[in-house]
Image (tube, rainbow, N blue to C red; front, side, top):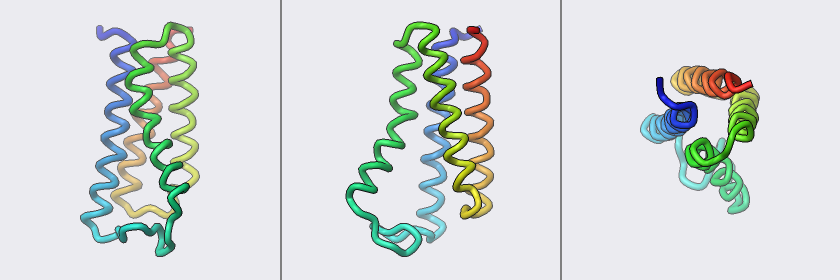
Length: 120
């Protein structure tokens, strides 16, 4: 069996790649206009916020390996739950391929919560 820390880290890598795949497919599908979201210009502060948000899975790859237990499990459960809630809040406006990828990411986040909760 793989160590819990490595398993959690790999799940965050998978989550990050799913989000990246969605972004790439959105660009290739023609639904992308540089500097805009839904036809509206986006401020540099909004881009900064999005960058910070998308850095969370990258940070979790590292934190999953270096944080001691039980803090590791608690942080993984909180952040994975946050991403599930965040993605559920915006799922209505997505195209079918994005909904599919979000459903897969829900599964990955659910596995993260499951494995992180085995410590308790």
